[in-house]
Length: 172
Image 1 (tube, helix red, strand yellow):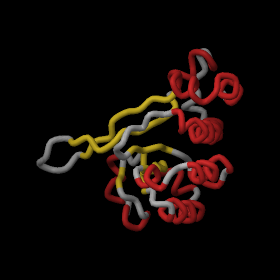
Image 2 (image 1 turned 30 degrees about the vertical axis):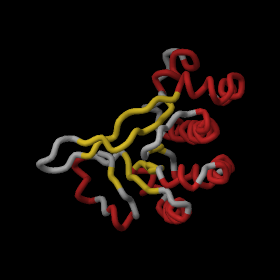
Image 3 (image 1 turned 30 degrees about the horizontal axis):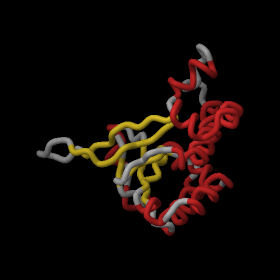
């Protein structure tokens, strides 16, 4: 995947493999309300030209390591995305915050752009790397960005203390 990114460049890579989906607010007694778009590298789009019939999602730690590579590619290709003028979300791993790619991203992103970002961390990733998450959260918030907790399962929603985690939103 990294070789493909280097070969085609950030613009073509983003156009071919980065997608977005709506994130909506579900409040009691109110209609669903669009909050933002979430941007991600589509595994389905990567699979056909780069993996054939390989299924990566169920491969545990191998997939987790692969997502670290995808995070860095995504951060490098960010300038090629049209994220619009409103808030948006990008899911990354806690470990990604401590990479050169993330450092470069923070240096290149404007304060205005950073104020629109919700960095989404998967609940299991936060639990597994909680000490690192606390440092990452402090850094991200100091830059004006926000935290989202992603991949919360409905039956654990009441167990997630968003205030304690410093998260603005939970994605179920």
